[in-house]
Picture 1 (cartoon, rainbow, N blue to C red):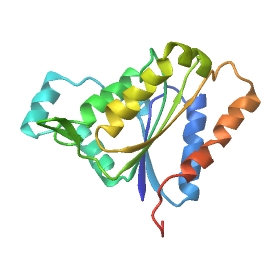
Picture 2: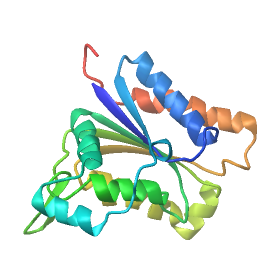
Picture 3: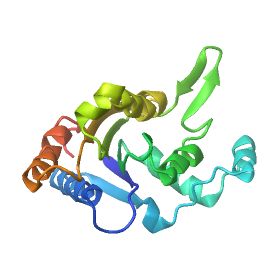
Length: 197
């Protein structure tokens, strides 16, 4: 089993970085080979340009997109870790999705709409918010965030998705944040890891 972690938080020190470390530790303990795609460190170019669109149509992708698609194809597990900004993913991650999960690679259109092409793969998504779970639920924003990434993106292209948001991160105490981090191994233990991995 192989995993690809797509990480979208700037800098080198944040709660998201701590999530990344815990996820990496658990993959290593399970003997799962993994690659981290730190989009800010990579200076990933997120704009799905007119040239990108033409290249997708011609099947002549740029080298950076071909590299990411090869990684995604080779991996059984995709992990996304990011903070929620404006009730969505940071622009750099949205651009990654736009540019990498292209028509003909991640999905194709048929008579009844899009059909996913990345079937049989698993995804885990960890997000963080400033708002509490209660605040988000009161306005239905928890469902907005979940539907965008789980149903509207990853399930649509074929993934079986596990999703977890860690809420009110800047405002809870250290013990609560540590409890959030300590829940990660249990969540990852639910993955379908093939025997012998």
